[in-house]
Image (cartoon, rainbow, N blue to C red):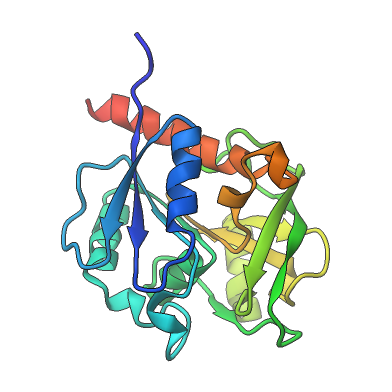
Length: 231
């Protein structure tokens, strides 16, 4: 019997820009992508959730500051609290930080300029639901496109996160001025991950790299296991 396709929701907020790309990438990796609207107060039956990139609510106030109050974000918070897998990409990362699901904050790039190019990132952990297809120390080429991607946390908090293994990805080259080159962090339980690079834009060699598929396919694998376990 073929493995079931895990149902992975992709939340669309007003101003989301990469929701369709995420839906396409997940389908290409043998998941069943499920659109979720920002006004939905309850999530459908899902095995994982992706918060995509873009400019939710026009990035007014701060990136993700308004989206944190969305009914769908509240549902995602409940989903994560119950152990559900949640991946936030770029603006999705910003939303997760604003919503208190991930530590730290995303600030304006150090250069005060928008950055849009492929970057190399180093995998710090390969034992998370999002990185099982990676190897620790592996370098991935994944594009970034953001103006507010500089992750920051006070040094004591950073040291605590480092000790707990919550730093998942680092830039292997100058990018946006993130403290200690952090590109992605997870929560303490390891079921919520936020990263600034866009894995959904790196799932086909024709795009210059398919390294992003390693992250998304890891999520699909973990969501499939969750679906089987809960069946």
